[in-house]
Length: 109
Image (cartoon, rainbow, N blue to C red; front, top):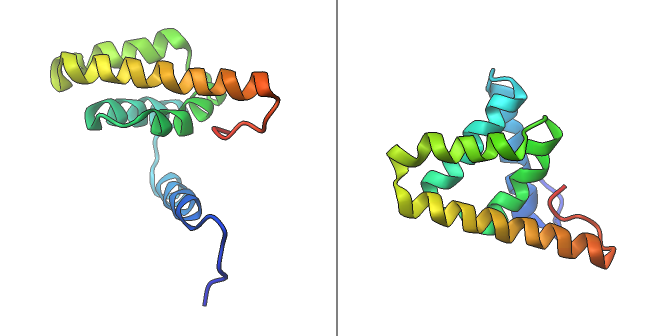
């Protein structure tokens, strides 16, 4: 029997991520490139980018590489999805900046 949690959705997502990492043999940076590409393909909301941009930066992904990922997937996912992804990434970065300026704990970490 599991213990009740105040954050069951976040706990489930964390467990799914850990399972994915345990069963994937990609290096950390390639894993993050793949995740960002998948987010763009799925037209993911800003909160999804927020959850992945910190780990992407932690493994050394640069803003130029993030842009390269969007360029690479553009012919596959299309202009609308790439532009939406860029907007969602900008929104996620704005959230990070606002949190940092307010002195609140970083929710993307």
